[in-house]
Length: 432
Image (tube, rainbow, N blue to C red; front, side, top):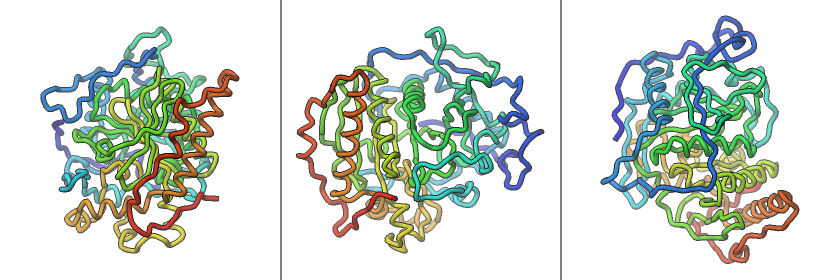
């Protein structure tokens, strides 16, 4: 298990509410960034995928520590020592809930009290970037750990003090000042372009490279769309370390199809949230494209979703969801609403971040299942969304070179049925 040094923390100077934005803050905006430097980590683009054996659950083996791993954790602990977090996440109580799935419960009252509130509509997945609202160019440079870019000479390299290329907006890794777990960071692609929270092919591939480059089965990366509990409309991914399996990683799956590029797509079974699992592929780009095409399809159809990248980039989970919509329509049980838990990617994956002592003390597998079942699309709606996704993937493959590339086993799509998670669950609709 990872050892965590416990130190007192204070609210980051650059994250205090009401602080004047602009010059003098050493931020990432034009007023302060000219001539600035930050550490730079460059990764090497992969050819064919070669995966090591999964390490989670194998107690006889110790996962290797890559340079990116040690760099990220070292810089994160440095920021903790400097008091840049809103609260001390290392004192939060955490336990594995007894039961078949091993849901993880954490009591994190600080995240509820000090987390930045959502500042945009929850019924639209795609919304324009608004520079007047909080975005990551307003953070101080001391909250940025390093730049993360593809190597220009096909070598993994680290530069402790590299200039920020303003003309070619850098991607950066920064601390999450309202952390959920040890090493909780944000990956912000092309930060100076001020992209809204929407996945594109280039950004998702960058996120997949980060997970693969970290090389630790304990490091997972997640994404929340607008309408699926993203709280900032500036493109970003989240990641942190947790040295136990997520329940969704242990859930059974049933294969739907294998694409012509070798990507296998399966459906989760016996899990409270319906979702798809992507793995394999001839190259990392093939895997990334299949998931990106799916996410873009959901975005374009105004369907909120969450993504989890796990197993050092080997498996990617995609969850279309409708909790915020049901919440807005008054269709969520008042008891669940009272918990004030917003089920985003971490909760859906089985890491339940609870905000009240009462909920933590009474945490059970049944309670976790009840909450997550409200997140899931109905069986009928999920089948419709799945058809949309496969249509988008097929169209994208045909457009790539003009040659149809149908899945090897597309007929299997119609054969899968999903057991009902909760009897009498109401059907969810696509947001319009």
